[in-house]
Length: 441
Ligand code: UGA
Image (cartoon, rainbow, N blue to C red; front, side):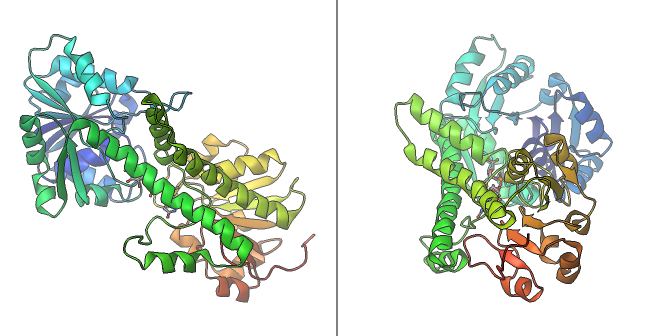
């Protein structure tokens, strides 16, 4: 089938590559002409494991192409996937202008009946509003706005798009649902659950999923604070809890808080949506508060161990909001860097993929070319992102490089016994510290 994809960001590009991979003829469009030109040359706009290869295969097979023209995108297409950004307004509500503009542009030039697929995360009610807005344009062909939320995680976007747990589509039209089911048939045949609902339910399910996952993380972060006060070990507590299949262990890793471009903004947008309908979803505010406290707790540990922060060199290992990506948007590591810089510390970071993005966002942050360079003469190191290469550090070399061998593990990545044996003062998250001796200064 022929389909268009509008927007080649973190959702649009993996979607386009995977739709081409399962056999569709895909034209992906973006108004950013430099991105399109780069993609035509095989240069990806961001890092995602396996994406460059899948894009290249799609292009070589003649099933994937890139354009900045709406006409080319939609010519002969049965569906157009809207994957444009929905950034937060100052109120926290989602700004839907890009969705409206993209949909208008597409509908006006459609060459036949068209399913407009809302893939960007939008509040419940958007498809209905969009339908009303688009009907004002006297279009020659029929169109249906359906909701098809994306559940992929950055860092595993290709795998998640190829083998999702579910394909959720909301629409009141059996015709549109049939087209969507046909598009996703190869993925459904491989085991993904097909869930068809009304439009508002699908839209709401997306926000509800992200809010629930954020809540799980905040639960563990609150638990971590309590473990630190009581001497318990959060990892063991979660293991014990998670052995109950009703609870499970996933998304219960305590850390320096969730970040990225989805959870923080979606949680607030969901709360605003509830406000709009007159429901006070106070739980969501608490989730955010605990998340803010998670990074503040790490800052406090640094202060406790360093005393004065002025001019002290502190290394941050990991700058992206999670491993497997170069995305630093709303990364808690960068929030921590800003807090340290505000207190006069000298902050040096290292990330296997995100150094450039981090420096662009926080110009006062120094970045090192490798992990040992970041540790050089540092008085304290903080593990902010659980990149596998940090778990494989040569601990002797790391301790020798540092001015003081002090590690605050914001992601509980390291083995406490190994850290202790290597002579580190090791301060994990929600677990008992090791080797905490007298103040180094
Ligand atoms: C999240 C959802 O997991 C996806 O299902 C969804 O499609 C996506 O948002 C979206 O709405 O587009 P993503 O933001 O890529 O995906 O990243 P996650 O893997 O969910 O991690 C989010 C944050 O939570 C990261 O900062 C991560 O470090 C943190 N996290 C995650 C924890 O602190 N603890 C955990 O146990 C899990």
